Length: 169
Image 1 (cartoon, rainbow, N blue to C red):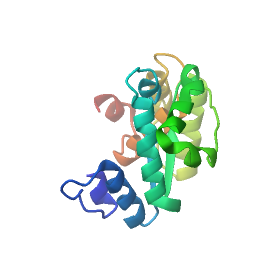
Image 2 (cartoon, rainbow, N blue to C red):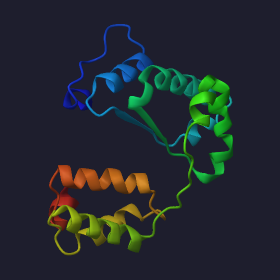
Image 3 (cartoon, one colour):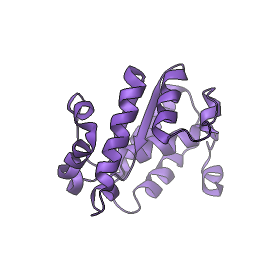
């Protein structure tokens, strides 16, 4: 479904995932942002999934060119193991990348970001919705910025502008 939203045809028979993702980047109007979440899972095994992910990244970035962007989300404890991606062939692509770490957001920060975003975008949010979403996102601790972005986008796309609609979803 996501590919059809950007006007890209489904993968061709026997087309590799890397070739398909590169084609989406080339064919889409604005390029492609590829998000890899929980990268630490690939980096923590002993069967070389980190190197496999590095090989996939190298191929996708090489074929996708300047229209491809990659966001890797990894926990702090695994950040030092990102060199496994380089070992898989993604060294050149990764050396030209920007690296940053971002700590999780507190419940108050999440609520404030949601309220500010609603005001700036002109989207109506019922009183208490930002707090309810923030409480859910921070239930297990601090909220990752990526999670906040994905949830906020879903709320806007699905028009979950009241606490009742949000809780039912």
